[in-house]
Length: 265
Ligand SMILES: Nc1ncnc2c1ncn2[C@@H]1O[C@H](COP(=O)(O)OP(=O)(O)OP(=O)(O)O)[C@@H](O)[C@H]1O
Image (tube, rainbow, N blue to C red; front, top):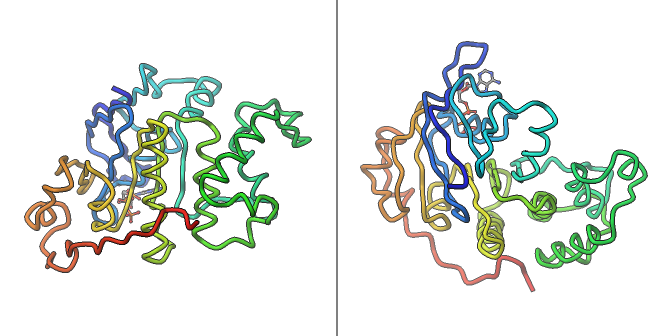
């Protein structure tokens, strides 16, 4: 098993119990969507995996390494195996696309080399290759603040992949994107995971998108897993269990199949 969460619990200093003993296993190469109402604990769960949020109790084991309990240096090494993609892109605005992408290698490159922005040639070549893959090779020298939302998210994806991770932690990747760009970004993440045998946990608000792109769906409600199964089993009854009473006929409308490529030619 690539990732095993056992009895994962998080109580914030405010007293909020955000996770109540979550058990979850993610095999190598599996892409999983995490859904649930606002405040269910989705972001907390994702952030507990790499200890951006410190779990109160329970354990996180990644590929045999117990993440909980690692000291600072070992945690830094372990985090290289987990690529993180945020909703808000988290790019450095005044740096170029290439500089933002190469910053994904900072955990590997020595302090002084990175200070002088000297990166090994193979890192630069890999960056070009990945930027080409996501359709941004013509934008390497553009500043991050000159990019559209979808382009920024692609840079964020490439930066995460530069670490050569085993697991992607993806927190609301489409929250600030229009519906068409959202589908392109989700498709791109799925394709890249497939190509590279990468596992992913994707926290996503949009149930229809989750259903369209992820085979496995995990539903969180008030800090507990209340559904774990294939997207095809996400019935109105299940959605009521996750979100409470509502009219789901609109939400689980068949998402119209669009034939666009994830990356425009
Ligand atoms: N830094 C924090 N300090 C205190 N309480 C927090 C903190 N972050 C989250 N919480 C609380 O923990 C619970 C879970 O929050 P979390 O952000 O993980 O949920 P979520 O499912 O990601 O929600 P959303 O979909 O709205 O982002 C909520 O009750 C929230 O108020």
